[in-house]
Structures are given as C-alpha cells and as structure tokens.
Length: 404
Ligand SMILES: NC(=O)c1ccc[n+]([C@@H]2O[C@H](COP(=O)([O-])OP(=O)(O)OC[C@H]3O[C@@H](n4cnc5c(N)ncnc54)[C@H](O)[C@@H]3O)[C@@H](O)[C@H]2O)c1
Image (cartoon, rainbow, N blue to C red; front, side, top):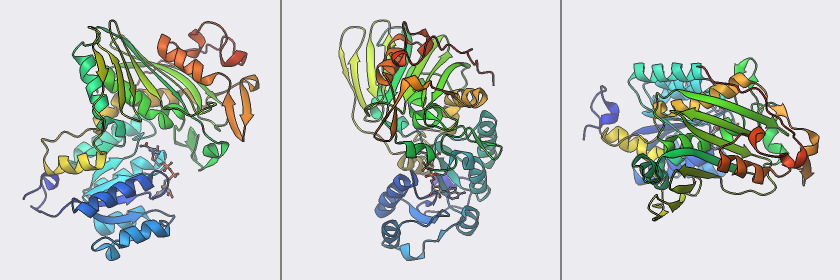
C-alpha cells in the first residue's frame, strides 16, 4: 500500500516510525500510547530523547518490543532526529521548547504531534504554522478532548441550533495542586525564562483544554476575531495565574473560563452551554455530556474518545480521515494565550483570601466563585458582592483586549 503519510516521498509501506521527545512528566502518557500502538504493529518506535533517561520500567517495555533492542534512546533531541529521521515526532517538553524542537523535526521531514499549548506566543504560533505548511507536513496538537465523542456531539447540537440561540459558554474548573507543583520545574508558573516567553499558568496550560474545548463547542471558526478580557491572580505560582477568569468574545458570543488550582477539593471541570432554550453540561475530562435541548429532550453524550496519535497515524495513511486537533484549530485558543502573555505576571491574591491546608494554598470560596462566573458569564469583578470570602473587593482591573 502506498501510504499517504509519505506523500511526495518515495513510495513506502512501512508503518510510520515515531520518535518521542520528552519521556517524563506528560511524556509518560505519550510513551504508553506509543508502546500500545507499536504493540499492534501500527507504528514503530523510532527513538526517544530526553536529557533524563527513561526509568528502568519504561526502558524494559521499549526493549521488549520486536526490534526494541535497537531503538536509540539519547539525551539530545537534535541527535536523535538527525539519526533516525522519523515519520512522526511527538514533542512533549516544556512549552518554550516546542517551537525549536518542532523546527528540528520538520527539518528532518517529520510530521508532528506537539503538546499543548503549541507555542508560547502568537508570533511563534504563526511561525510554526508557516513552517509546517512550507514543509508540507501536518501538525496535531495535544488537545486530547478534541477526540472526545461527547464534545463532538455537543458541538453538533450547538451548530444545529438544538439549544436555540447560543447566549454564551461558561467553564468552571477547580483543582487542587500542592505547592511543589509550582516549583516542579524551572519553567513552571513562569511568564518567561531567560528572556524567552513561556506563558505558563492555569489558563494557558493546566486548563488550556477548558478554553480550547469551549471554543470548539461554541463553533468558533479558526480565523475568527477573538477579543479577550482577563482577571488573573496568583497565590503559589511564581508569575503565572493559578486562579483566574477570562472572557473571550467571538461573533458576539461570550465564552467565560473561570478556574483555580487552589480549590479546597478537586473535581472535574465543566463546560456549560447556555442556549436560549436549552442547556448542556460537558465534563471534558470524563467525556460526560448531560442537559436538554430546546424542546426539552434530555441529552446524554456518546462515550469514548479517539486518541490523537491514533488519529494522526490514520490521517497519514488516509488523508480522508480528518485530523482531530490540527494546528490551525488552535488559533482561537492562541488569542487567549497571547493576551495572557501580554498581560504579564498575575496579581498576587490578597493574603486574606488564602489559607494553607496540608502544605497547599486554598483560596477561600474558589469553587463557588468560579461556578458563579460560568453561570453568569461574568468575570470575578462583575459578580455581585465580595468574592473569595472578602479577600478581594471590587478587584476590577482594566480589561486587556487582545489585538494580535
Ligand atoms: N495534554 C495534557 O493533558 C497535558 C498534561 C500535562 C502536560 N502537558 C504538556 O506537556 C508538555 C510537557 O509538560 P511536563 O509537565 O511533562 O513537563 P516537564 O518539565 O515534566 O518535562 C517533560 C520532559 O521533557 C524533558 N525535556 C525538557 N527539555 C527537553 C529537550 N530539549 N529535549 C528533550 N527532552 C526535554 C524533560 O527532561 C522532561 O523529562 C507541556 O507542553 C505541557 O503543557 C499536557
């Protein structure tokens, strides 16, 4: 079979050879996915690169694959890419390293699966988009919820007018993070590092899926003009936000994302679709869709999701299979990231709003506050009364409209 993933290349029928850059942290999830697919024969492991060698268990699993004994495992990504010239490269490294590593991979003729957020600025996003196009390769971005069948169903219902006119979309997220989360790596919670943008924070990284998924459910086009208003706070994060609200407006429809990494209790984030005559709730981390349409019909979501690497491999074999999370589809999300980057370090949250529980910061009333934002499509400062149990009074900062 002449596989389409080598379009323009010599005809070949070998399964795509996939390299993984970054094997720890979230890279472990990619390594699991890669090994699972390699065990089926759908891909081959071309090699792994990370300055920190994989742990012995992971190493054993790679070596146990047919031909696994010869898989190169090196510290330096450039060396690996030059040596193996993979068909696909997974980039699962810190945000500010995505663009340079993606460039190296493209230069060896590789397609890409780049973790989210794809880049640390809109300018970098445009550079990456141009270079992917110039190389004639494809780039999938690690917004794994884009493979969710429930999310696709919700988006279809909205597009079909099943909930009536779309009044807006709210997202509320409340997670618990230890203080160590914010110091786990030099880039964690940083807006920049050694003069290079990083743009890490709750809005742009931990809850990036929240915004990207909400934009997709709302049907915001890749080329839509998106304005952004922000209210960003930090408690434990060195620079980035850990408790924040953002309102993105596209075609007059508001999308409010209100999140905290400093909740008293951890729970799944929820996307709330406010239709004029219907309402949907989607837990994008569990693919759970509930609600009702305009005529009162109860909605439940189809379960399951397509894994992004599997989808990329299927797309390369047959371009009629659409890519689920192509780089271009991240453009609306990148307006948020760029607005955050321009906004700079988040404001410290007043001490009165924060308590210390078992070594982690807890923002008073954070869960209830982010829920109210998502219900009322409001920023923190627009909620009636005091927020964070009086820790913040009338905090309204000047909005930061995004003009990119
Ligand atoms: N899709 C998701 O749900 C999800 C979840 C968590 C993290 N992420 C994303 O994954 C990426 C990595 O995040 P993380 O928390 O795992 O980061 P991390 O700091 O733990 O780094 C991951 C690995 O990359 C390695 N690395 C760093 N620079 C490298 C280089 N130049 N070459 C090769 N390896 C290098 C590190 O040694 C580490 O092993 C980020 O973009 C993050 O936003 C995605």
